Picture (spheres, protein in one colour):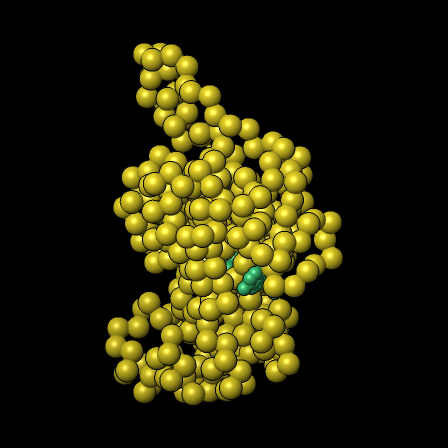
Amino acid sequence: MSKPGLLLIGGATDIMLDRMSAEFTLHKLNEIKDFNTWVETSGASIEAVATNGHDGVPARVMEGCPNLKVASAYGVGYDAIDTAACVARGIKVSHTPNVLNAEVANTTLLLILACFRNFLSDEHHARSGDWEREGNAPLSRSPDNRVIGILGMGRIGQEIAERLQVFNPTLLYHTRSKKDVPYEYCADLKEMAARADVLICITPGGASTNKIVNKDVLEALGPEGLVVNVSRGTVIDEDALIAALQSGKLGMAGLDVFEKEPHIPDALKAMDNVVLLPHVGSATHETRAAMGKLTVDNLIQWKQDGTVLTPVPECAHL
Ligand code: NAP
Ligand code: 8YV
């Protein structure tokens, strides 16, 4: 019996490629020279797509693969996928929740420590010889005993809150609905920012969170405040962030995600009160292996019985 066609969009680990090739006839979008010709010869054979939170499922793929039945995302965020269009066609969308919670939480703590403790400038002070030439580095600030506001209290937000306990924080959170967690709920994001020393962003991307952290929220966080973004770049108004940091109305930023990845504005690169990471929140061998396993497990499950293990909420009823 011929294997169903699978179109890979974006990257995959070697183990993912081996497992997908054993079960599917694998096509790689980045190796297709003439897409329109490929559609004519192979588009109808494609029943499955493997993609990620950055590349999604482009409209040309949706149009060129009329028999598409499942899209498996290598990541938990799926804002790049038009789930309404998928649901309308009965296409099941899966993602990789939970297996990356710990790593993204670690990245969040890394950014908090790097910002408060001047990690980048102190490392340079040591490596450059400035310590020998100029003496001790300036004092930094402790992350301990801070008021920390978390925007988003889902799978990763709750892991972040648990791991933050090492800093003996006062924890606040803001979401659209109150959660059963032992932290203070703040119905108003700006009010939470005004009370916080640190604001952590860990919501999904998409319309409901687009630029939710705006000029008013950033200035409420204030000149001593730190904003950490490990969600999506669209959650923070990037122009307002740059202006607030440059004017001193906001103290620091620790950023793993950006509005137009992989582009990072030069203004952010030029500031020494900003720590920049290239969207590596989940990017460890161990976590990506777990994400990759679940991505392919979803595809194999679909091939076996038409269901997926971890559907996105919008597709859970399909
Ligand atoms: P989740 O379990 O679905 O949690 C999302 C949280 O955000 C929920 O508490 C939700 O509560 C809240 N939320 C959603 N829309 C909101 C809004 N408009 N205003 C306020 N709160 C809102 O998702 P997760 O597994 O924690 O993942 C969260 C996101 O992290 C992903 O979608 C992805 O974008 C990002 N992420 C980034 C990396 C990285 O490498 N940097 C890695 C993994 C994930 P309510 O629905 O009650 O509002
Ligand atoms: C991935 C992420 O790097 O899971 C997510 O939502 O942002 C990261 O784990 C991204 O999805 C690209 O694969």
